[in-house]
Length: 529
Image (tube, rainbow, N blue to C red; front, side, top):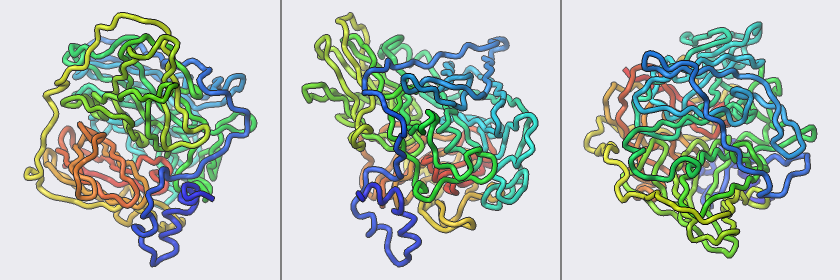
């Protein structure tokens, strides 16, 4: 059994259970992934045969009063993800990914979500600077009509309880429909929306509840970056398929109604053996011999990627990064390959102008093996004029907080540990409790936070963006540039970030975005006062 597989099954949890063995010693050799892989029980298609789908852009139902209003129905549907195979899904508007919302900076958006699924849901706009009432707190639930079960994990039978025996006196329940309001007073960026129900985020995203939300502004439009058909959203996910074509997932309760969690082999994270881009397996996209802007999101539950663009003759194309999670960089950064953790986004420009017509560029996952090493391909089909450019200066509005501005430094350990129900994932030695305030920050304060990891943990802060200050006492890495909202911690690593906690008062979250870790306790409350 490989070390990668061992860490997926036993790794961090076994280290804690054994006692006396240091995490740093056990993880001295950094593994490429954390999690265990499911194997599909249906024949899988050859790569680079299925065309890349582009998610439809949702039209507003109203634009009056300076507010764009949208309506989305969450419903069950089926789709042909694998050719000739029908797969049941939970969807936004019947598609996976859900429809893309495109917005303008500073123009408010209201999205009315109607839940016709068999379980409660929550919607979180990941990367949004959103008032707490619309941020998608895990117990602020939209309950389907006729729901008679517990609103959150039913381990203790309370309508506002969790599988961990916790109660949330501030939970907000609405029936069938809820309006989420997003002011979008923020930099242009690629955001995404997904389910955030307490204890059940991972299986809900796995079943299809994820979509993109782009924020634009005039300054970005004026840069001359590739646009129109040459700007491509790329939502990368991994999935596995059962013999009947359904999405395989090792849920303890496949109905997702009562007991949360996954089988013991998958406690460190669920990995699939099929790589999907925009919901299609190993797709191919025909391109001009020109620059393209790739808006890349890793929407996988637990899989990390290290992306590389390779021609059939072995040459590599540069990945020119122009933006991060929270928008444009100050200046471009050139990568030969690029690591991307769950929930991270990268805004890249790739130049196909020197690829011969008929040539193919394969996007490879250097952390994958076998079928998971391929992601997608581009085939150059024609010569074409290209008026796009990559400016040497991209943005002048990046915040430049200094360490000397910080009013305090906090440290948080992200590690496996024991919970009331057995093994789980903890922040500072504690599992998530919606009734407990873990951190209180004054509105407008600048703080430095230090994160320490045992295995891979992509750490996400709600509401605010941040800058990476250091990794294990050294400088940030090249891919840490810009304003981020999710940072990838590697095994045994410590990372320092700095942020100003401004925007809105209220209850927010920070958590690991390995979705299985999140569901099993690795989440904490942030109160901004």
